[in-house]
Image (cartoon, rainbow, N blue to C red; front, side, top):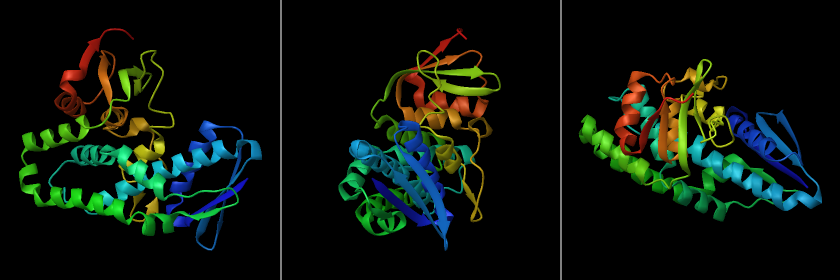
Length: 272
C-alpha cells in the first residue's frame, strides 16, 4: 500500500494532524512528508495485510481535519462576532464545530474515496466535493449574523450556546477537571488525561486560538497557554457528569462560563 495525500503548503498543518493521528493509532505504517513547488505531500506506506485498517484510519483523520480545521476557518471567516470577548468567540466557534458533527462526518465519508496507491488532492476535495456541506454551514452562519443584535444580550447568547452544546451526543459518563503540576487537565474517572490524546490534540486547540496569524503559521500552543482549554475540552468530550477537583485552578472567567453552560452536570470533589 502506498497512499499519497497532497495540499497547498500554507495548509500543511492539515497533513501534520493526519500524520499525528495515524502514528498515534497504529505502528503498522511508515509516514513520510515532503514539499515540492509549494505543495506538501504525505506518503503513507503499509503492508497488504493492514490495508483495510490503514485506509479506515486515513478516512477518519481526513474527516476530522475537515470538521475541525477547515470548518473552523470557514466559520470564523464569515461570522460576525466582533462584540464578543475572545473567550466567548472561541467557545461559540467550538460549539458550532461540534454541532451536528456526526452528520458532517457521515456526509464527508460518503464523498471521500481513498484507495491504496491513490493520490488525494485534499484541498481540491475540500473545495469542490464539500459544496453541499458548506451550504449547510452557511445557513447557520447567515442565521447567526441576521440575529447578531439579539445575541449581544448575554442571556440570549448563553442560551444559544447551551442549545448547541446540549444537542451533542454524550461521549463520556464522567470527566474530572484536575490540576497536575502547573497545568489543568480534563481526565477520565481514573484521572488519565483526555486532553492530550487523539481527540483533543494540541493542533485542534492551536487552531481554535488562531493557528495562523497574518498568514504565517505559528507553533501549536501548549494546552495550558490558552484560557478556554477546559471549556473547549468539555464541549468536545460532551460528558454527562463533570467533577471539578478543588486543586484545579481554572480562571474565574472560564469557570463562570463553565457553570453557566454545564450547571446541571457539575459536581465538586476534594480528591487530588
